[in-house]
Length: 207
Image 1 (cartoon, rainbow, N blue to C red):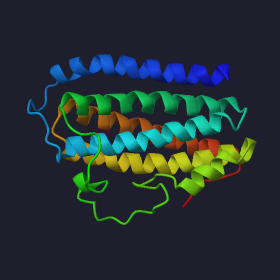
Image 2: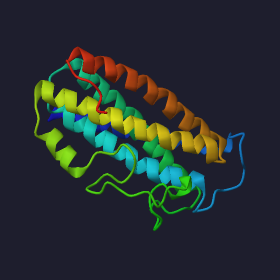
Image 3: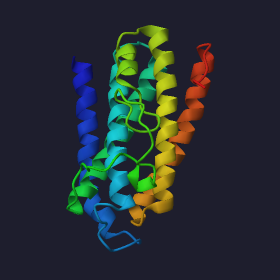
Image 4: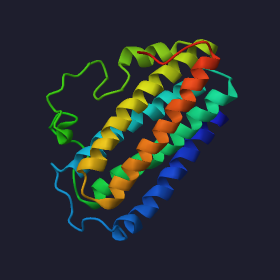
């Protein structure tokens, strides 16, 4: 229980640090000085990626309690910390822009993909796990939990990269474009790491 509280406290601290830096980041931005509109790519990306990141954080907490493998637990911790931090920044920008954190538009509308059929059952955007997959992960232990987590997170990162590349192309606020590019770079690196970790466990990413 104390370990779990440590994770939560660490993640909360990261979000607070990020939130404290948001005003500086926006004020010092060399990109557009115009506040984005509610239907802009900047706002759409911030809203959708905040939701996408939240599931990655939840998935990381789940596997942390399902395995004693230090390598997997360390990766899960890093993903939870990084994505909780980034999520705090995205939501903080929406606050600064006085824009709603939810929209009646379908996810991915800002990318011109609002009519994309959803997989349903919790999978709102590319790469997201379904409710059934999250429940399955929570019911596994040890090596099986490790492999399924690595497969789910690989898919999750691929979907996240697709969205982040969309922001790099379409967003107008320079600091948000740079964050999106950081996401692309970081998640590509983690995909390669997870591919190796799966191979060590006699498994592969899902097709």
